[in-house]
Length: 527
Image (cartoon, rainbow, N blue to C red):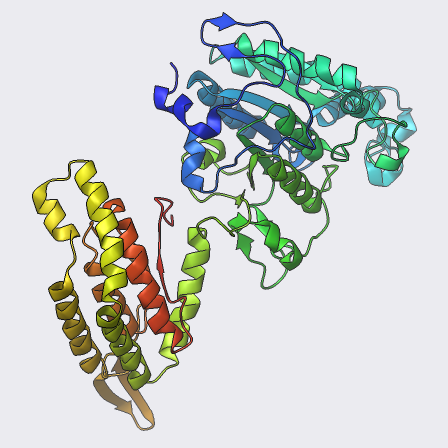
């Protein structure tokens, strides 16, 4: 079972492995490696709705995701769910690689058992647990990793076998990425495994790895620098950039990136992160079982994004998180390029509309009516500008053979615009009592009265067909009732809608609420 052929036709996906080319039913030998990570830049997905086209995925499982809350052993149910999702993606024809933690946690169980067997009678009967870190007897992590690595892979092998998927273990150390020869060998191996329809599972070789706090300054002279590999977050970022992955999913124990630590008052989940958001985030402490905190994840994600890899940070404990992300739903934090030159994310537009609605509510009825009247005047005074944009839509529609009835509703002319202007002035005239009108006034007791008053709904989402004259009408109704508004029009009228939206923004700017109404230009709706 493979993805639809259209998947491969998407320009974003026309990428080859840095060391070899994979084709269905055939394998070409490795070609000259291309691993200039610092210089390579490929296009990224700018909207969540495009994530369904991601073919090459890297899924990173954090220690907090696959480890039990007591830090002793793995959360088997959670891990099985993630394995199922990865297997489903693989069987759909996607190329999936996993970066996993858990060897230390898995091996710690066995070492703890051996430690208990070696205790004296007095130590065994002691109320203190000598295997706990706080008691001063720390199990050596490298030894635990050596013991747990084989067991962890056996567990993965058994789980993936239920779906008929083969896996391979790839252990790496930090120096492997800074040595040109070993790095070439690593990605040749990954290329070969992918071409053979095998899921590589990558992990750091913790039994021999240098300390995670080793700085770039400590690297050998002449080594090739990239991101400082201090944990599996930076490892997965480096790996994703080298293999030119379409999507990197960093699974943690939090729902995504917050503007401040989640446990603090006022913490807000950021569904979309751009390079301009770095200064608005306050980072807290890392998890007690991981080597990297949220700061590490953001640095790794932005580093990968700068090299053309789309990134989502999500909660690995959420059910079907991977499949939900690929479906384009609003899960976790989606890292995208700066909004400059791209459409503004829908959640940002929605937040702006909510703020704009409150600004409109603070205005007097006369001020809202004046804004609607100003929009009505613009429809007449800017007639030429509107009709030029509409002519582009009509020409494109005729080229694609749009039916005559559809062309009729798509077209605008001078008479239509004048009628629209008259209709908007009528809306403005009748809007003075829309907000704050008392519908019912009941006296319940002395000094206790109950009033039923009209108030704005808040933020509206209106989807309309390719009928551009609907846009100013709906916008005027929202302005008159002090509601925020998101509009999604038919793609056939895209130029006309953009021109009309400019006039709506201009009218709203006269009362300082230009973001109260916005045009959603993509199918990436708010879930």
